[in-house]
Length: 140
Image (cartoon, rainbow, N blue to C red; front, side, top):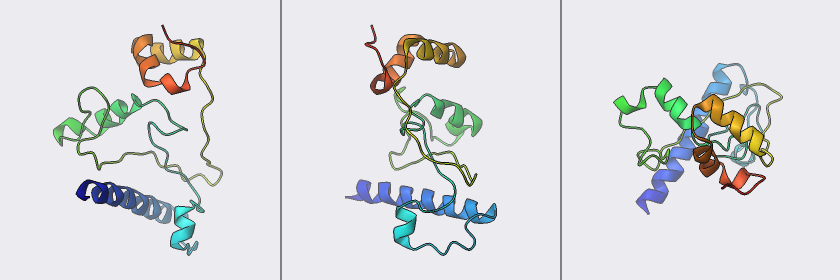
Protein backbone atom coordinates (compact mmCIF):
# COMPACT_ATOMS: atom_id res chain seq x y z
CA UNK A 1 0.00 0.00 0.00
CA UNK A 2 2.85 2.38 0.82
CA UNK A 3 4.44 1.70 -2.58
CA UNK A 4 1.16 2.40 -4.40
CA UNK A 5 0.75 5.64 -2.48
CA UNK A 6 4.34 6.68 -3.24
CA UNK A 7 3.77 6.00 -6.95
CA UNK A 8 0.63 8.15 -7.01
CA UNK A 9 2.36 10.95 -5.10
CA UNK A 10 5.30 10.92 -7.54
CA UNK A 11 2.91 11.21 -10.49
CA UNK A 12 0.92 13.94 -8.75
CA UNK A 13 4.08 15.92 -8.07
CA UNK A 14 5.15 15.55 -11.72
CA UNK A 15 1.79 16.97 -12.79
CA UNK A 16 2.17 19.79 -10.24
CA UNK A 17 5.60 20.65 -11.69
CA UNK A 18 4.15 20.54 -15.19
CA UNK A 19 1.43 22.98 -14.15
CA UNK A 20 3.99 25.24 -12.49
CA UNK A 21 6.27 25.19 -15.54
CA UNK A 22 3.36 26.06 -17.83
CA UNK A 23 2.36 28.97 -15.60
CA UNK A 24 5.92 30.28 -15.28
CA UNK A 25 6.37 30.06 -19.06
CA UNK A 26 3.17 32.06 -19.51
CA UNK A 27 0.89 29.15 -20.38
CA UNK A 28 -2.04 28.18 -18.24
CA UNK A 29 -2.22 31.29 -16.05
CA UNK A 30 -5.84 31.82 -17.02
CA UNK A 31 -6.88 28.23 -17.64
CA UNK A 32 -8.69 27.72 -14.32
CA UNK A 33 -8.83 23.98 -14.96
CA UNK A 34 -10.78 21.61 -12.78
CA UNK A 35 -9.15 18.42 -11.47
CA UNK A 36 -11.10 16.54 -14.15
CA UNK A 37 -9.63 18.86 -16.83
CA UNK A 38 -6.13 18.17 -15.54
CA UNK A 39 -6.68 14.42 -15.51
CA UNK A 40 -8.06 14.68 -19.06
CA UNK A 41 -4.94 16.68 -20.04
CA UNK A 42 -7.04 19.59 -21.31
CA UNK A 43 -4.15 22.03 -21.07
CA UNK A 44 -1.48 23.44 -23.35
CA UNK A 45 1.70 21.41 -23.47
CA UNK A 46 2.59 17.79 -22.85
CA UNK A 47 4.88 15.81 -20.53
CA UNK A 48 5.98 12.67 -22.38
CA UNK A 49 8.51 10.33 -20.85
CA UNK A 50 10.87 7.63 -22.02
CA UNK A 51 9.01 4.34 -22.36
CA UNK A 52 5.66 5.92 -23.15
CA UNK A 53 4.15 5.55 -26.66
CA UNK A 54 5.57 8.85 -27.95
CA UNK A 55 9.06 8.01 -26.62
CA UNK A 56 9.40 4.21 -26.58
CA UNK A 57 13.20 4.16 -26.27
CA UNK A 58 14.01 3.63 -22.57
CA UNK A 59 17.74 4.05 -23.24
CA UNK A 60 17.20 7.81 -23.51
CA UNK A 61 16.79 7.83 -19.73
CA UNK A 62 20.55 7.31 -19.60
CA UNK A 63 21.02 10.55 -21.51
CA UNK A 64 18.82 12.40 -19.04
CA UNK A 65 20.54 10.90 -16.02
CA UNK A 66 23.97 11.80 -17.38
CA UNK A 67 22.83 15.40 -17.89
CA UNK A 68 21.66 15.73 -14.30
CA UNK A 69 24.53 13.64 -12.89
CA UNK A 70 22.03 11.26 -11.33
CA UNK A 71 24.66 8.86 -10.00
CA UNK A 72 25.73 11.53 -7.53
CA UNK A 73 22.24 11.51 -6.03
CA UNK A 74 21.70 7.75 -6.14
CA UNK A 75 18.88 8.17 -8.68
CA UNK A 76 20.14 6.05 -11.54
CA UNK A 77 19.34 2.93 -13.48
CA UNK A 78 19.06 -0.26 -11.51
CA UNK A 79 20.48 -3.50 -12.84
CA UNK A 80 20.95 -2.09 -16.36
CA UNK A 81 17.19 -1.88 -16.85
CA UNK A 82 16.85 1.90 -16.83
CA UNK A 83 14.66 1.70 -13.75
CA UNK A 84 14.44 4.60 -11.38
CA UNK A 85 15.69 4.20 -7.83
CA UNK A 86 13.30 4.52 -5.94
CA UNK A 87 10.51 2.93 -7.90
CA UNK A 88 8.23 5.85 -7.13
CA UNK A 89 10.38 8.23 -9.19
CA UNK A 90 9.42 9.78 -12.49
CA UNK A 91 11.16 11.61 -15.31
CA UNK A 92 9.80 13.39 -18.31
CA UNK A 93 10.26 16.02 -20.95
CA UNK A 94 8.29 19.25 -20.88
CA UNK A 95 6.93 20.79 -24.08
CA UNK A 96 4.96 24.00 -23.75
CA UNK A 97 4.31 24.61 -27.43
CA UNK A 98 0.58 25.21 -27.95
CA UNK A 99 0.43 22.66 -30.78
CA UNK A 100 2.29 19.88 -28.95
CA UNK A 101 0.33 16.65 -28.84
CA UNK A 102 0.86 13.07 -27.75
CA UNK A 103 1.22 10.52 -30.48
CA UNK A 104 2.16 6.88 -30.72
CA UNK A 105 5.20 5.82 -32.67
CA UNK A 106 4.36 3.32 -35.39
CA UNK A 107 6.13 0.00 -35.80
CA UNK A 108 9.85 0.36 -36.50
CA UNK A 109 11.61 -1.21 -39.45
CA UNK A 110 15.03 -2.86 -39.28
CA UNK A 111 16.68 0.14 -41.00
CA UNK A 112 15.27 2.55 -38.42
CA UNK A 113 16.56 0.42 -35.55
CA UNK A 114 19.98 0.11 -37.19
CA UNK A 115 20.12 3.89 -37.62
CA UNK A 116 19.11 4.47 -33.99
CA UNK A 117 21.68 1.90 -32.89
CA UNK A 118 24.41 3.72 -34.80
CA UNK A 119 23.41 7.13 -33.40
CA UNK A 120 23.11 5.80 -29.82
CA UNK A 121 26.32 3.79 -29.99
CA UNK A 122 24.49 0.69 -28.79
CA UNK A 123 24.38 -2.73 -30.44
CA UNK A 124 21.37 -3.41 -32.68
CA UNK A 125 20.49 -6.39 -30.48
CA UNK A 126 20.26 -4.12 -27.41
CA UNK A 127 18.05 -1.62 -29.21
CA UNK A 128 15.84 -4.48 -30.41
CA UNK A 129 15.52 -5.70 -26.82
CA UNK A 130 14.42 -2.26 -25.59
CA UNK A 131 12.14 -1.60 -28.55
CA UNK A 132 10.71 -5.13 -28.87
CA UNK A 133 7.00 -4.22 -28.78
CA UNK A 134 7.57 -1.53 -31.42
CA UNK A 135 9.41 -3.66 -33.98
CA UNK A 136 7.84 -4.38 -37.36
CA UNK A 137 9.98 -7.51 -37.76
CA UNK A 138 11.13 -10.49 -35.74
CA UNK A 139 14.46 -9.76 -34.08
CA UNK A 140 17.06 -12.54 -34.43
